[in-house]
Length: 159
Image: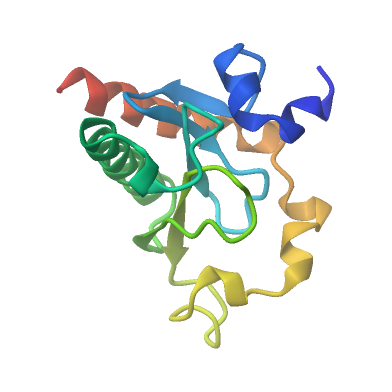
């Protein structure tokens, strides 16, 4: 499979062609992030590529999207806590500055992060982190993917 799914993340998820998808949720798709300089970074993609903002969703779907964000955040938290004793917390963000579709970022934070960055927004990390091959999502992250997926399955089964 080529990386063409990156140009149509939601459409490729709807077609079952997005390899980053962890699980379909109520109002979107939980996906693992392309970069893993903070292992466990995940994104919630809305399931309609025409939706640009949370306010464009009908109230019920809006609440479902926010609930999905909560579930993905909790899944990342449990998985990261199990895999790394230095796990601190999860940051949840809906920004919408770059991609023209509604999505939410789930960033795990760790005690081992650089002292000058650990208490700051992730977006203040050096730009190189987003392009550095050392952090690119690949087979090294399979165990992490499995842990987050297992948690998503557990949390959504309880609903």
